Image (cartoon, rainbow, N blue to C red; front, side):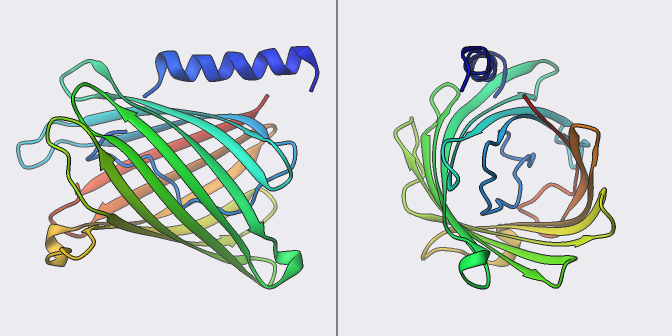
Length: 244
């Protein structure tokens, strides 16, 4: 990498650490794909808006990602987020993750990867660790299915929630043409392993998405509907990514 490109990447990482930061009720997560793109070096802004409901005020979240492929199979990413919960933005969390694609479709019938995440949260809340296993199957040239299994743990903090927590994510996409892809996603936070409780106590969200490209910009617009009491009713999201 040239000194100029190296400096630009460091600048983006520092920018994330300084001005970006995940809201518990809002959802800026994606259905983690297992594919590592060689020479990927990109910056992404994600926004999510949740209207007020049942006495809870509206929420607006801004998240920033800076990522880079270290090899053809390994990608490093810095993630941060700020949230507006009281009428002004506040730091929520900063995290880093490492994605390793150990199975390529060319070697079999699907792509598969594992991802390790570490997160530091605002104030006296617990720090977080998570491990994700992502798989993607492609059907013909237009359809694909992505399934993610996520295990997470809380460390420290004033009142840490102990145990292993399980989440699943599913995404189905259809490539309408070279520029537009239609999708449908499902996010399911099941809770603590061994004590899941009823489905209504869990957080389940589903919704459609449309994504595409315009020149060097990649974008995704999506809507999530909460289908259980543990999830907010409506989340409107916009993701925009650009290489650098």
